[in-house]
Length: 120
Image 1 (cartoon, rainbow, N blue to C red):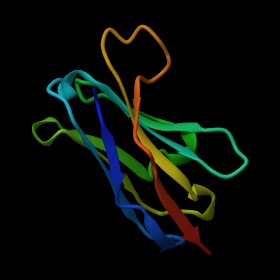
Image 2: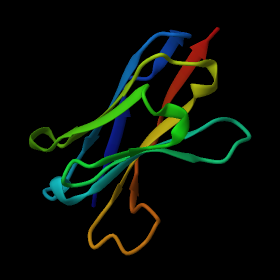
Image 3: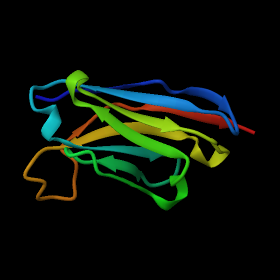
């Protein structure tokens, strides 16, 4: 129904930057609430950032001021610009989509993730 494919992960030194991309299929991308999650080995998955259909954003406190989520509805893409990266940012990053009417806290569609590794 909806496919999400992440790209842009890699190995970066602390203090560096990465830009993650998520390509979405579907004809109703502009209506989705989009989120970026991350999960480190042995830890719970964490919601990092969200962006609404209208472009409103939110972030977990640990990334505020460093990460920026954005979307390009014409391209069915959502991005996560990550600056001033820290070793604790190391995780598998996944994008996810929530379809309207947004009744649940759960996301409906998930990508398979891209590895982000920050070295010190």
